[in-house]
Amino acid sequence: ATLTTDHKIHIWNAADGDELQQFGPLAGPVTAFAFHPNDPLLFTASLAKTEPSTSLVQAWNFHDGKTVSDPLRADGIIRSMTMHPDGQRVLLHVRDTTGDGSHARFWDIETATPDAFLFLHRDPISGVELNSTGSLLLTSGEDGTVRLWDTSKVKPVGSAFRHATPIRDMQCSHHGRF
Picture (tube, rainbow, N blue to C red):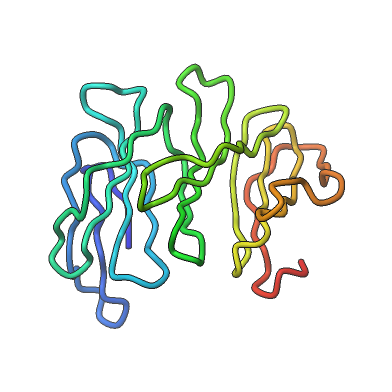
């Protein structure tokens, strides 16, 4: 799947390179997307056309390309999104509209409500990554730190990993040890 500047998500056949389907166009620029781990759903994040400081998360039926429910509304610009392996929550990485900060937060898909806890860094978050079970979360900050979080206890695990320069990318290994 690819995200393009035409306000659409394009789904491709990996075997022959043919385009299978498009989702959209969405009202505003598409900023992120994620596949549901169990159901034939695709979640998209886009900026609201009339409220550029608001992001909309929309669920789409993968088979017919139609929206499934009303969009979830989040203040700020969603930079990335990741589905929790349980399929009940989506992790949104949101940049504040001022550009001065960001956070990561789980949202309940069924109720369209955010969890109370925000995953934060001293400086804005630059990336988020869940391990394969969703029990651990990595967040990277523009301050050159990476934090490991226990998502069930909503607490950091150990000290931050410190780098001399900003983090460009990160990943958890599938077994979660690295």
